[in-house]
Amino acid sequence: MSDGTSLVTGVTCRSCGAVGVAGARFCATCGQPLTQRADERRVVTVLFADLVGFTALAERRDPEQVKNLVDRCFERLAADVADFGGRVDKFVGDAVLALFGAPLAHEDDAERAVRCALRMQRTLSDWREGTGADELQLRVGINTGEVLVGALRAGGDWTAMGDVVNTASRLQTMAEPGTVVVGPDTHAATLDAVRYTPLGELRTKGREGLVEAWVAVEPIALPGHRTRRADVPIVGRDLELGLIGSVIEAAVKRRRAATVVVVAEAGMGKSRLVEAAAERAACEHGMAVWEGRCVPYGEANVWWPVAEAVRQGCGITTEDPLATAERLAVVAVTAALEMPDRAPEVKRIVTGLLYLMGYEVSLRDIDPLRAREEAMRSVLGFVEALTHTRPVVLVVSDLHWADDLVLETIAALLDRLRGAPFVVVASARLELQD
Image 1 (spheres, rainbow, N blue to C red):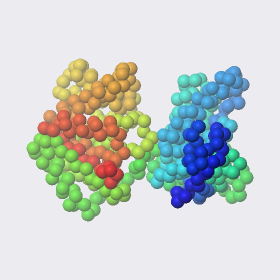
Image 2 (tube, rainbow, N blue to C red; image 1 turned 30 degrees about the vertical axis):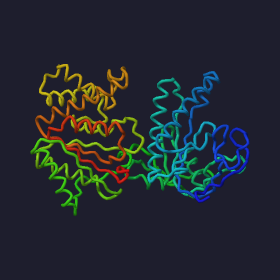
Image 3 (spheres, one colour; image 1 turned 135 degrees about the vertical axis):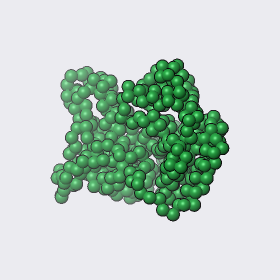
Image 4 (cartoon, helix red, strand yellow; image 1 turned 45 degrees about the vertical axis):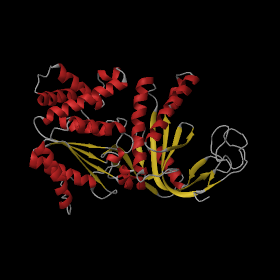
């Protein structure tokens, strides 16, 4: 077959033992594939995570209870792998081996793996608090390189083989509990997205020579984005800036909402262009600039780009605790509505804004659909009030990654504010048109 898959005819299903129908690609009994993918070389990022402290946990708990705890723990860790587009290859004792880049490849598989590992550490930490299994910690090793992927002839399971896998396992053994250690190729591929602490060259068991390694500390950019200097001038875009600027100027003068979407292939400077247009609008028209970036994976808050924009409008950072965020939101909303800070409308809008930013507020205790509607009302009310005193431009980068809820919010804003100086300037890849 041209796709690298060979059709298996009339064979026994490896999953359930039923005899496959001649010419069928999937088992009629259990639904598992009957096709056998040919071996191939792929560049893959391998994540090897090992639970430590299992022995200490087993010493003070019933074996059945321990098994249930560990099973639930691995379910959560496997869910993290899936969230970042990876695939759990196998569970080996108290460890999990996951692949990023096979069978499905992404341009940022190494970054996905590192972000996933950091998420797994947080997941385990939260899980420990809820179960009291304080003994359990996670060590993670990550390595990137060429492997052979295919089915093992004995068992038929699809897996990855090669030194890259072995090195990921060895890096895991060198990691301190609670940390993520990566090899040189993973580090090089993610340096602009993750902050690292160097470990230097390590000697790993069973391997000649030294392996340079780093500890992943935290992401320094959103998924799908890279850090860049804000003061880099934009060159050769005068025509495009002029066109966007004319739309913004008309919206401000006529007090009529408008939308500009810059569509181009990846790497063409779309995001920098819309940011530059917004910066110019702030200087020339005194516009309030709110910016939100859509992300391709890993962010559980579907409101993310809207929440990011609201945070900016209120002066709230992602590190601010609830009390600080609430205080800053009250200041921003009372100024926009020109109402006392104890007014019921102020409290309602502030609660909705805090909810969409991900804080634990009273809306989390009601029906999710009602909570979503209340959050939407809060955004609309806040932005509408703000446009009474100054024009607003909402910059949304990478709109092609936007959740339907984000698109719905933008549409609702444009409808509600059609008679106000409000402009949405967005960037998107060509697939948005599909």
